Image 1: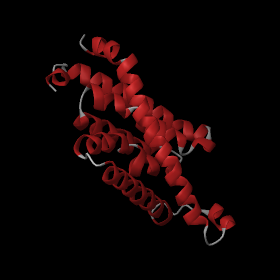
Image 2 (image 1 turned 180 degrees about the horizontal axis):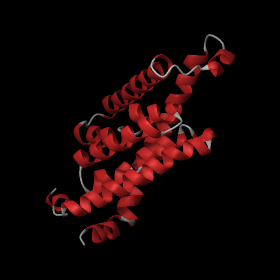
Image 3 (image 1 turned 120 degrees about the horizontal axis):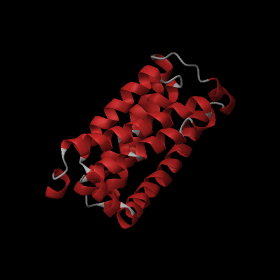
Image 4 (image 1 turned 60 degrees about the horizontal axis):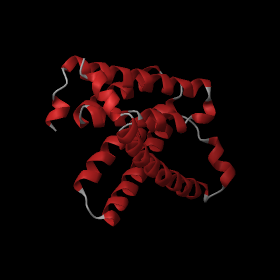
Length: 185
């Protein structure tokens, strides 16, 4: 833990700024490539792993807040912005906290699924009732459409969670030492 705090504030700020800038760029790409409305916010959120590992969770929450605010204010794709704010941005940080504190795998997965489902439902309620964005596509799926899409979302979430864990492992094995050297300038 001491090692994380050994960085100067300028190094922490630089890393946070780079991650925030890359995240905002990814969020902007949702306007250019609308089919990636969900994939790009997930990827932008995954970038926060760098800040969680190299600095700490408090700084990661600061970067998340900055990207969330910028996304809501200037992003044309409000659905993507809400997905980042409600789930994609904070989940990698929350995942790190949960995995450190909870030892029971069953309880851990139940909490992760609960967080995902509450976040996604809240995001869509805001999208529908605050931003007044119509979800015309839902009518094509019939009365079970919402439940089928939520179920598919849960499957994608499980894959995303495992992918994040493997990404952390890969990062620690391949790039962690090099990034640490860069941050100690």
